Length: 268
Image 1 (cartoon, rainbow, N blue to C red):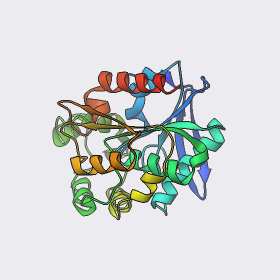
Image 2 (cartoon, one colour):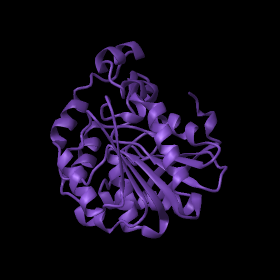
Image 3 (cartoon, rainbow, N blue to C red):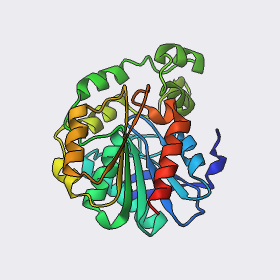
Image 4 (cartoon, one colour):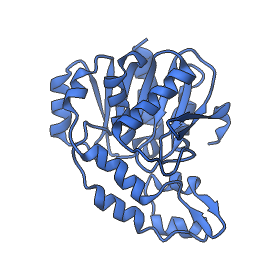
């Protein structure tokens, strides 16, 4: 997998923060991809490739991640969603389909709720309404990474064979003293704390565009949360990916991209 599916990397400056995006440029039906916590646009490349050329794809490095501003002053949910609104407004210029995984799915949902004129379809992969989790535990784990890593092999040995590990390894940034991730542990903790602060049931209920929930059999979404989401919005679709964990797009990429492409085709 390479970056050839995208024509350009473009940066959008908003309120002192730079948001970096990969853009395929071609196609009238625009799909914006949002990665999860500690991820980047790079991990969405298999998804983007599967959607081309039928769709124009924009993959966003959310603030604090990837090539975007590493230490933004604002990591509120409003800041993240306003970033997405700026990307849609300046690059697409028309309503788009938002596809987000984990924290990116939460960002996508809130964008659809707070900027309804910019979103025409919503796909949430292993993402819910928020209000759960332990940000301090996650932050402590990221802070435990023995960075800088001397080389990719050392990083791989520490991170282990998780589905997300390959994406993290590809994203390592070379510094004079070694390899470091493209994010800081304290920023990750602060960002996910905003997601965990409270559940956004009102925002979920207010979304009116066609919506697909994709959850994993061994994922992080609870049955109770998904059940209530579907009770509040019975028209939303729901697919469970069998024998799979939280990072469906990396663990079962062909199955994920197939069901995504099929759903988008059905919604034309």
